[in-house]
Image (cartoon, rainbow, N blue to C red; front, top):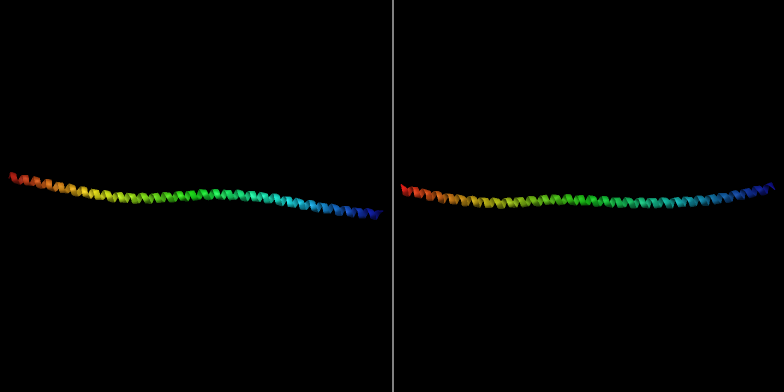
Length: 115
């Protein structure tokens, strides 16, 4: 009678160990699925964050490039306008000196006629 109890005990132990292993494997599989889902969610969040950071940095770099280009354009425009104004001023000075020359000459002629 004792050996039958021992056999039954061994069979129950074997069945319990088998059930325990299957439950353990199911738990491990469930954990891996859950962790994989968490990892995918975190990876997606990091990807979205990286895209946002890239968008902001690219926008900033584009803005800085635009400001530098505008500075260069303004510099070229100011140099061109300065050159145009210098030419106008030179023409103005030439016209003024010509008028002064003729005016002084006319005054000199009038002084000579009076003497």
